[in-house]
Length: 518
Image (cartoon, rainbow, N blue to C red; front, side, top):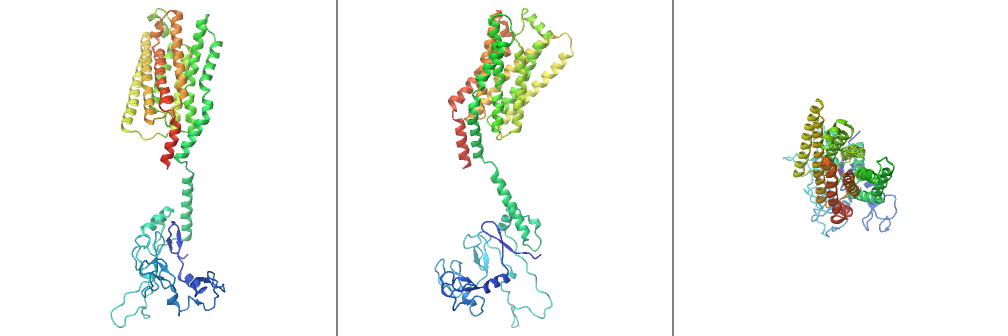
């Protein structure tokens, strides 16, 4: 298959150049109007532009009028004019005798046809590639009277084959953007027709794929619409948890007396409030398909703390030896750990792990700053050391017999670790809200339920101590007391951030996204 020569147009497409045979056929099959110089089709009996009859027309292919009818380039602005015009259409400069027919030299960037003598485009100043000798440049004349422009007929050597001009850097850039590979081209240069079609189809496919991608503005709009549509259902989280806790507390068995019944209701109500408080964040992450606004450090600390708290409650509730050791140290009084405490701690640990899994799936956090990377490493390193030390100590205590008092000390230490983590874990989330000047991504219903559960947890602990006249339960279960107080304190900070400092965080998020997209 013969190679076709092409040039790059201004819109980045490859255009096949017409050969000499095609150009000659077009010249023969057309005629020029002597009145307006418009080139008409050979079949028309009158001028298509000025309606002048064809009488007296002159064909472009006739040799007698070839010089007058040929297109010429203005010596001042290099504009290509119609052959019969005595002045330049662009700058009105008079046609000089040197403005004869010249070879067209198309700009590879804007496709403007320049005179072959120019080295830069007259329209866009792009450097023009050099014209090879095979395109029609005159051959150098030899010295002596016998020199001639024509080849010696006696010379048996065949004429040199015509080579296609090499691509310029701009042409290669445009071809590469359409999917053309420089290694696929052969030594002669040029492209096959199927190569051009494949390159253009590849470019169109990539542009369509980029157009289907969700922009930052569309994503912000989608997240904001999802947030607004879910507000109506999210308002049922707090009353639903309270009603469910009261119903379960009324029908669950309890010791005789109204105080014990109220204590049972308070216990199950705070259990449902704290347990349900994890679900608004999970639902919000799933709805937004994003975890932006949720602190990863907070979730890591939360998971480790609830693991310690679950181990403390489970061992106190199910191990009779540890309960006996507790009674010996507290004047034969049982601990304040209830079944709902064990279920709550285990459920909280599992749902926190689920939230960490969502973070891995929807990961869209921005790159960390230097200080944030140091804090992240400090958190992970500290928790790793504490977890390793606790595991080694638990294995050692498990190998001993009759050491319930030591297990009691070990579990009390885990409870204190949970309290320390509870004091620290909220700080990354508070700082993240302050940096973003928004609480978008951190659901307020998580805060409201946590605040309700903290108040009811402390209330149940104080009520049990008052009913039994044993205030050692407060000191004997420091984790439960400190958890309630710490959660209430930080929940107040979160409510101030959401309702007072950054009340229009969601709307501002959309505005920022609009401005950044623009």
